[in-house]
Length: 289
Image 1 (cartoon, rainbow, N blue to C red):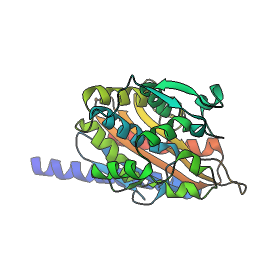
Image 2 (image 1 turned 180 degrees about the horizontal axis):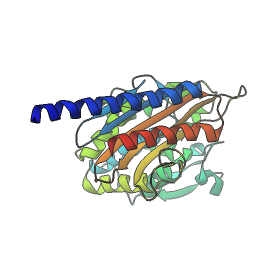
Image 3 (image 1 turned 180 degrees about the vertical axis):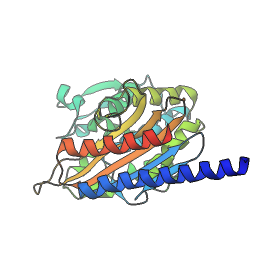
Image 4 (image 1 turned 90 degrees about the horizontal axis):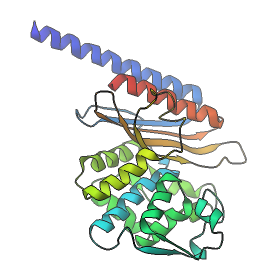
């Protein structure tokens, strides 16, 4: 009887997984976009992927690994969170999202490292991101650190300013959905950052407000989502290279669902692209909760 019960349970789970894959495939087919999904339930190791090893432009999703890398530098004593950092005119983004630039268009302002990290995640500020990359010694050293953690599906190759040179540059800054999900898994295990640095990054991710209509969009009100979005501009031909969201969902049972959804090369509207992420996220959430 017990063996029969386990077999029946396994068959039910398998059928549910097939249905979830069909749901994701239906959304991806309808969208005519390049969509990738990676989900991992931390406590059980259960996974689901859809084109999870394809390469997608990260856009601001890469600000999560950059914040992780700078907080590691804090932990080893190279920097302190309360130390002042001068933001120069060279650091200022000429265009794109940057509340720092909007307030200080010519630079010449000092902020604490903690404030810059806050702007990097909470405001998705391009100037803050490039300042952190400068402090880290550039994109290559940042990339090398992420790879040293055992993550191969992430490639940090360009600064925010460099990505603005043309629409194709952003594709050099790529990730696979499984790569980003893996990095969140490593972060959640709590052995790469000190507790204080972990808490700092968790707070920023959990309070980050961009992307309210993406992973969070259709989830029950009050669901905790610690995440980082990424969004490109739309080219002259009406194609948007990146509409992304990735992070950690706290399920009703307290378990941690890590989810990455990338939407690339889409001619859908802003609302449509965010809706596809929301629909996929709700389907994954319902499957794992």
